[in-house]
View (cartoon, rainbow, N blue to C red):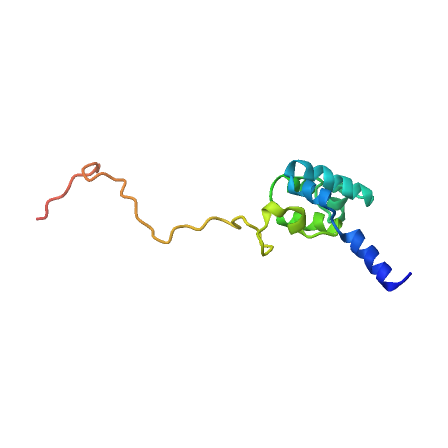
Length: 128
């Protein structure tokens, strides 16, 4: 085989065709497509979890909710990027489009004055 034929075959094997892109864009059908593609490779979501020594539910959870680590691992098994596999979860630059980590606390702390002025249970003392 000529080099250009090998290159064309490589590009064809790693290219996502237009119907597949339409399926990937629709989150309802994406899970079935991913499972189908893994089966074509002789894998399953459970085998992806076993490969990393984790519970079998973790890759399945990444299909429903954003889970960057497992999105990457599933995409690696399919020889894609997470941005190609889960396009609505990433922006143009390939960064997650959701807030990461805990929400920030406000920098201004206002003390709560919850004790009423006349609600004390001790009497005021008179100074002698």
